[in-house]
Amino acid sequence: MSDNQKQSNDLTQWKVKDLVFRVEGGDPGDFISFDEEKCDSCGDCAMVCAGSLWTVPEGKKARLAPKYRELCLECAACYAVCEADAIDFRYPNGGTGIVIQHG
Ligand code: SF4
Ligand code: SF4
Image (tube, rainbow, N blue to C red):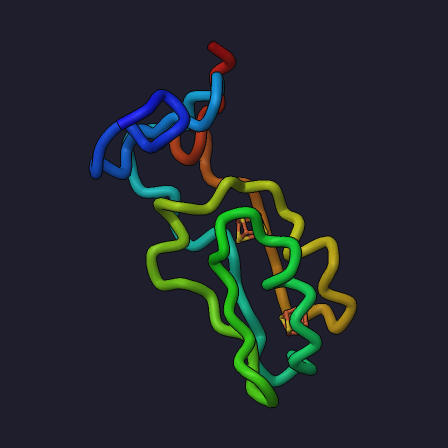
């Protein structure tokens, strides 16, 4: 497996190029919430999510991957682009969530 690929199947740490993503211990809780009633199925969240954690099937409401707490990069892009205000985002509690290291 090359350096540009995930180091292992362990979701607690992986490497992309020279960046190391690591999930700090503890439960980050639900830091993204989704209001299906407000979703207009525009698909923008799926388009911007670098982790491919949103799916929006044709003519249906958006769906967030159940394992988002482990895989989300916490960029808040989905929250920023959702003009319908269907997505709410807050950074995980201190001591939990993604830590990005260079090198
Ligand atoms: S960006 Fe918002 S309104 Fe558009 S599909 Fe995603 S959740 Fe629904
Ligand atoms: S915060 Fe970023 S990585 Fe996480 S679900 Fe939203 S767009 Fe995807």
